[in-house]
Image 1: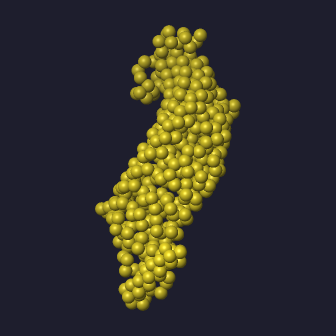
Image 2: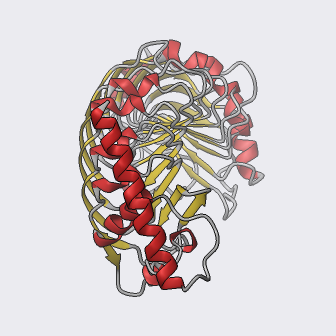
Length: 406
């Protein structure tokens, strides 16, 4: 009780000081509510730790002889700061340089905190993760280092967490999955390690963890079916994802490329409302036989271990990458017809075990389209604009093709 009374007395003395100071400077002209003195001093400390990069004048309005609620990037409700957006938000504008002061944790009513791309360095203040009202936290494309605190889950009001394009290390705290309102988690392009936490709540719609060093596997219930955007590419994740992907029927973007996922690709996924399906450079196996025509504009299944025939249901895909697999049989005529009609822009089938394609040797591939057939068990009937990395050899050695034909 004594400590609490001491804090109340201190707050009252500081409020009196700020009131007298502001009235003196403004000569009686300022009649609105005075900013809480704790918030006033916190803004001063935050300002001391940062400065404009050359070409930026964000802090020009931060004159503490005036009302801080009129500062650029500061939004107040009554006498407290509820939003703090540091830096000019216009695209291409220079950002800020410096460190984030721990005093930010004293902005007890803060619900939104953002920092524009710049050169903010050092670890995130621990006090930041004690803000119970914080709903939106975005500090991307800076040089933030250190680890995420284990008590991250205490931000129970948090809905968006964007710390992408920084230098964060360590594991993603398990407690993040306990934030019931969390909708967007964007931690891509860092140096995070360990496994992906369990996200049990159906509030999550976007999860972007690409370009980290994450390991481990994903259980069938590790992610909620509410997900609409999922990007886990450029990690070292392993194991099957058949049962997990079969549940995520709200996805409109999926990128699991450049991992070590195994097993079959679920047929259901080709009927999801996805605009881009990126599963390349994994260890997926088995046939791929969609039930209906695939309406996904871009499908990349290249560099896996997929086998069986190429499905004619892929003829409605605009950009189809099936190269560097183990597909066999002939190329469906429906794919050829739509390619010649310029409805397919990219059809990469190189480095498989395909045995034929029905196409007139005099046919001309539309300039807007690209077909690559080389290194299969056939001599390509026409010259096709294959990428340089596809190599120069047109066909496979006979002994390889004999094995796959048998």
